[in-house]
Image (cartoon, rainbow, N blue to C red; front, side, top):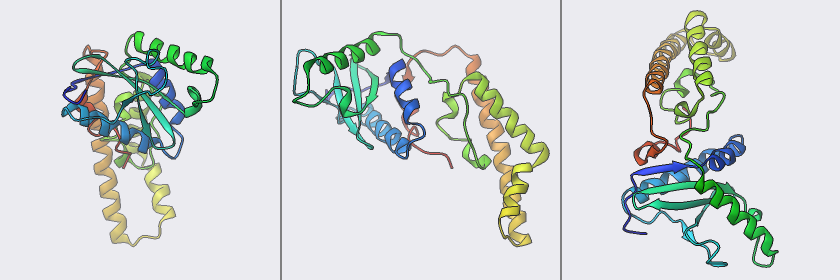
Length: 228
């Protein structure tokens, strides 16, 4: 395992569903960072920290797990020498502890294997990306994970702000800034709006091209970087 060099990442529908359930939790970006660091490690050929289970080795054969912040367990598999699959994100009670009934473990194994066997899904298709200032959009890893409708809505919100500056006006009203600082802040806001527009347009162009269901390992370099 330590000699593998991963170049492709497959993501299951169950993983994306589990990640969606964690999106509003305090540990969300820490969890993403932990996964990003693991992907970067295995892409270098280093150990990623995902390990085999001790109990029921036959049932868990080929399924590994890694502990992440918030007491979350990441389940992984390696379907090919250069590919890792992210299968699920669960709490400990998903598969039970040592003294709990065997049926829970068997059910967990069945669900993880089912996630591994279904077609990979490139994106969770988030419905929206919340932002408080336009500087939180360009470089945000969730930008590439938006649905097409979500991307269109975000683009429209940026164009509207460029026309009205309503959000900027509310921000300046809340802050007690000198005129000099307001001018500097306004210019930075306008620059960030232009950058955000360019980032969204770039993503729209990328969507027009046919894309493989797998992700490049390199795409995870900034996967844990929060907005801003």
